[in-house]
Amino acid sequence: MRRVYMLMSLVVACAMVASCGMNGSKNSSDEEHQMPSATLEFWVVCDDNMKSALTSFLYLEADALVADYYADVLGQEAPVSLRSLLRDGYIVEGLWGEVYEAPIGGMFVAAADKESIAQIDEYLELEAVRARLDEITNGEVKLVWSHKNSLNDTNDGIYTLYALQGREGVVPATPAMDGSGITDVRAVKSQYGGYEVSISMDNPMAVAWAELTEANIGRHIAIVVNDRVYSAPMVMSRIDCGQATISGDFSPKEAKALARAIQPR
Image 1 (cartoon, rainbow, N blue to C red):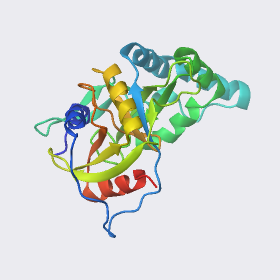
Image 2: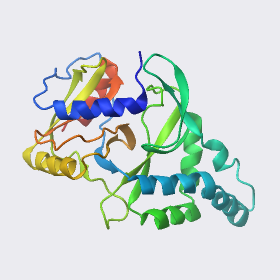
Image 3: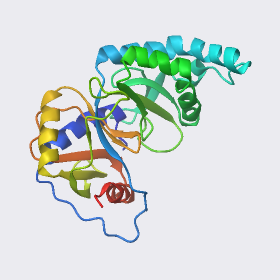
Image 4: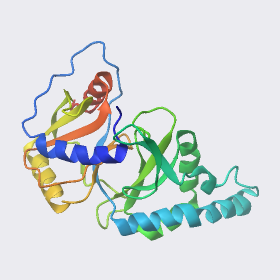
């Protein structure tokens, strides 16, 4: 049974803490899917005040800026309103298999159908919209979509938008850490079913990871691959062992392909 996407974040949090000393098999199968070399980043998810401000902007204010840009600059109407592309909630599957719609909130600032994401991204890059976003965030926040939909697969469905906090005073927004200190990446079987990706770090990266997790206990850290959030576990304690886990209820082929893409060259 597929797990609830939000609950999965809490499960991953436990996996992150328990991953020290985790063993797994190397990614050596010739049959696994190929995936281009990937960019790995670690971001702190924004606090509730920032997420609330961004949700209000996206759902209540941004549409007027989009309409004005099309009218004043392009001399035409916007092809579709931004508000009509945004969903008021996202579909999740409960622990007992029940399916229901959860309202926007928690880790997410917006939600949309997969087919609407490209148009939303285009609107968010309009000069007036970008300027207002930078005013709200001081240019230190990056908006990133989830890798999987709210039912935890990559098919059509409702995807969620994260607000990720960059380093203070650095514009444009930059991640708290990147993957430059990775020493090994393995696809491993999760204790909860499915597969996940275990990441090992060298000493400097492990020290930075320990400091980052200690400074953000009780907050979510998003693991971002190629500008998509793969997981965003809540940090339960300082993690000293130089390990992190990307959990997403992957199939064996998905996990091995992702591990190979992140593997240091």
